[in-house]
Picture 1 (cartoon, rainbow, N blue to C red):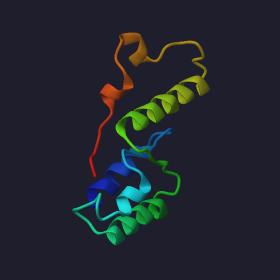
Picture 2: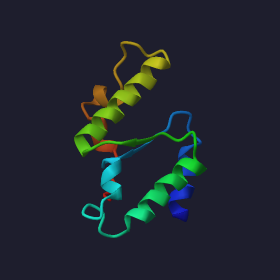
Picture 3: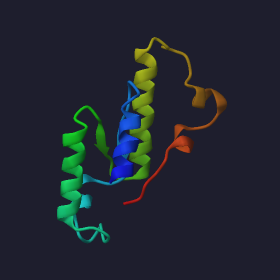
Picture 4: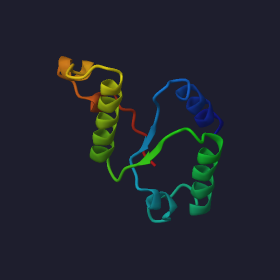
Length: 107
């Protein structure tokens, strides 16, 4: 968990930040879904993240498609908020999707 905490501190240096889980919250507490850790460990780990990083957005999405969609809309909203209304995002202009740049961690 120390490496994860360090990475989250680095992430929080950015003004707009979020961690998107490609799993529903209840899946992380289900022994059938998470074979490597106990449900109690997962619950403590998630609670620890919320307690240590109260400003960090933790978003639980049921699958990769939903996570990618949420991420795309989030960055589009940030782009618009910064005054780039009507301008394409770099990824859209180059023909690449944001999904190509996502880092996925399977649970």
